Figure 1 (cartoon, rainbow, N blue to C red):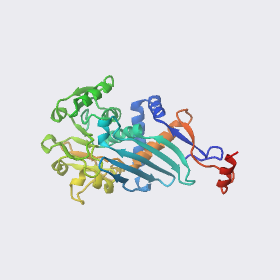
Figure 2 (cartoon, rainbow, N blue to C red):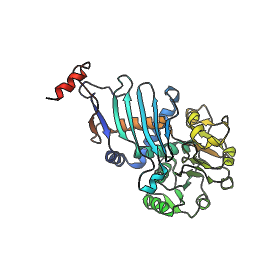
Figure 3 (cartoon, rainbow, N blue to C red):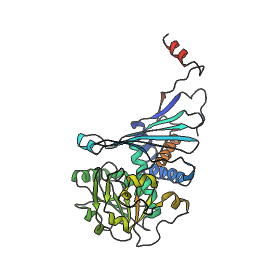
Figure 4 (cartoon, rainbow, N blue to C red):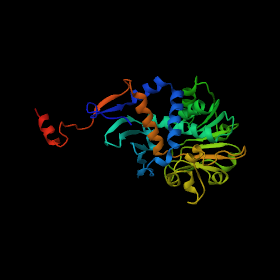
Amino acid sequence: MTNLTPSDKALVPFVSVDNMMKLIHHVGLEEMLSQLANYIEADFKRWELFDKTPRVASHSDVGVIELMPTSDGEAYGFKYVNGHPKNTSEGLQTVTAFGLLADVYTGYPVLLTEMTILTAMRTAATSGLVAKYLAPKGADTMAMIGNGAQSEFQSMAMKAICGLKTVRLYDIDSKATEKAARNLAGSGLNVVACASAEEAMEGAQIITTCTADKQYATILTDNMVGSGVHINAIGGDCPGKTELAADILHRSDIFVEYPEQTRIEGEIQQLDPDHPVIELWQVMSGTAKGRTSDKQITLFDSVGFAIEDFSALRYVRDKIAGTDLFFELDLLADPDDPRDLFGMLGRAAG
């Protein structure tokens, strides 16, 4: 953890949206996705050190606002994030976020950063990391069903981490597919725009679903999914929101981040509370098996977990060191005498 010195302890580095974009371009998009995946993998392998709790959610009729906290005993991190599907129709982002990293020893923040873009990056990096463990050997084609704000990040992470060569796009909104295809032009991927989900899945060994509507949806029906594929289900992320037919779940080996949260928010909210799942940290640490056969259907029931955000915060803290890609915020009161906060206020009047 960064040691705070008396000269800098009252100033908190802040990474704005503009500086986050500059950081991504400075590192390189694919390189940063790979590096984020490495940080996430390292933290998953020390999973048992972390405080873990399902995110704290405040639901309304139009969306959800959540806090996602965790700590490894030395650093504490949290993310504020919302999910408002109706925002798209109003010209607003469905998801916005910011995050903070703090020193457990002092309690002082050491980083404040935007996390709208960073969340898209860490979500994609997590998908690519999990596919590295679970996708069929040699998988090079992905169906990307749902072509909103996450789709290009997901596609590029699969390319950077898993060697993806072809992405087959589909969205019920053809303009979203056109947008994704346009953004991925020149990426090195073979991009195929499709007219249906069934067409998008032709020849795909990896199937990613990422839709926004907060409802029990059936984006994939049972007869659409053949044996041997890896399903990356990232759209279902709150109670009452799913994408897969329950029959698919019964045919799959299901891998999750944190069962206590996924059973509330993920695809498995459709199943009995004791339905068996495999925790990803155990696969990454070698205490559980991932893909075991060519015919196995592996399903990553992704809802996003605080440790992934912690990894991303830790990564950004490390990468901005020695750069000018942050501002220093006067966020903390720092009186000469820590017992004399009132005196500091009085002296400010002069």
